[in-house]
Image (cartoon, rainbow, N blue to C red; front, side, top):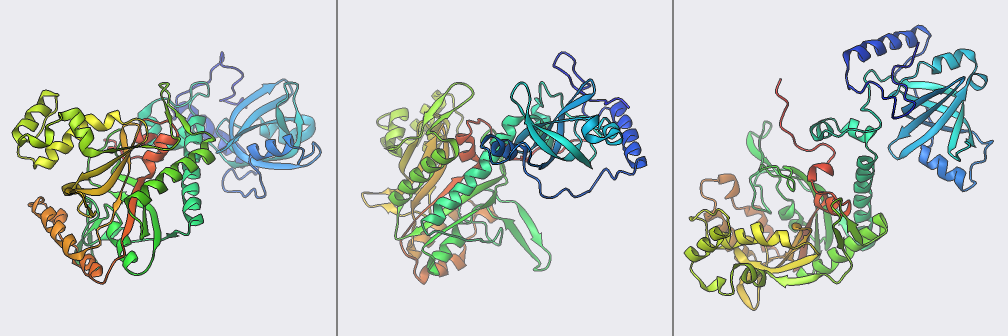
Amino acid sequence: MQNDTTTADPGNPVDTVTGSEEIYQLRLGKLAEWEKNGVAPFGSEFPDTRSGTEIKELFSTGKISPEGKVRTAGRITAYRTMGKSIFADIQDIRGKIQIYTKKDSLGEENFELFKKIDIGDIIGVEGTLFLTRTSEITIKIESFKLLGKSLRTLPEKWHGLTDLEQIYRQRYLDLISNPESRDRFLKRSTIIREIRSFLHDRSFIEVETPMLQYIPGGAAAKPFKTYYEALHTDMFMRIAPELYLKRLLVGGYDKIFELNRNFRNEGMSRKHNPEFTMIEIYQAFGGCSTMMALVEELIVNIADKVLGTRTVKFSDGKEIDLSPPWRRVEYSELIREFGGADWFEIPKEEKIARIRAKGLDIDASAPEFEVTHELYEKLIEATLVKPTFVTKLPAQLVPLAIKCSDNPDFVDVFELEINGQELAPGYSELNNPLEQRKRFEEQTSLHKGKPEEGKIDEDFLTALEYGMPPAGGMGIGIDRLTMLLTGTDSIRDVILFPSLKPVQK
């Protein structure tokens, strides 16, 4: 039977309709043929394999001789019949390797079976290595095993999967078809591994705190709400782990971090996904400056190890140099630069008028600090492309930080901005339980009508009353960090399965 997805060259394209009913029925027929020949097309084991990339590296360095047997397994992504010989590509998540066979090496019966392989099928092979006339490392297979029959055609190999909606909804096809996507997500995994290694080497301890919380705290955001049947109570998916991590500081943990998911029931955009990954880090007896030094060293270290360079390149030609030292600038300085030198002296009404004159819409009933912050978020933040620590933010924005000794209207915090978006907030943690209660009460008054955002965590305040050491703390958005280090502009391109609107049936 002719192979329905054989590809010889880009001038002879195959049927590219993923899920074509005609191809589907044809492959069901092939499935029956495999079974008729006594082959179980699904579920067989094929242990002791190496990836194609590893095999090529070992062969290139002389660690595998041409006579040595190799075993690999993966998906057939190209299949070329050349007279009495067959070449094919077998791919795994790290790359591909060419395989070759002919009737003499497989035997007539097995060669006829191999001719029934389709692009997309998953097979295991064993054989020896050689170099083709074009110096391509190739496995001359002596045996093979069908491990998973593909019933649908893959996206056409010369163009890959290009429809964004399909890429996000069928990430598995994206990973099969687009090497750039595979590389990006492998980098994400490596970034996370290097973060953990960096912190473990500095004696930080990884911990886990509750995802389900009675009171969602540690940030100002709308939570996802659920109901705990066994306890007959409302619960919330956490918006941040901060208040539980600080309980551990009270308990004596001095250097801790948690890398996990947070959930915020808010909008989706190029920079936001309701379910996202963040790491929070706390160091007793440190402060805001401690965290700035730590995050600068951490990100530069990751760039060196994962990218091999401190210059990040984007598809539009933009480049960002991560080499330290990074710029430090006070929040009020930026506000005066963009809003006017007299910004903090003029009345609220004039501030609103200036913002509206710049084309921004603003709710006239918003508190004055929110009016100012609207200017920062909508106009200033996008201009901060090179790594920048924005320091000393208004106290109302960060109720969990210590106030600045030289101006109690501001708190000892930073926001790390790179490529026009916040990557990491950090601050000197407030450890005064009396002041913390006062701040919580002020925050609660701003959220009337939103009971889940206006509750005070009394247990946390009780913990503070036992004494929490001074500490520095910060959070780093893993998705945004991956966006930066892979030169990616959309958060959906660094999350394997981003949040999407359900398909209407």
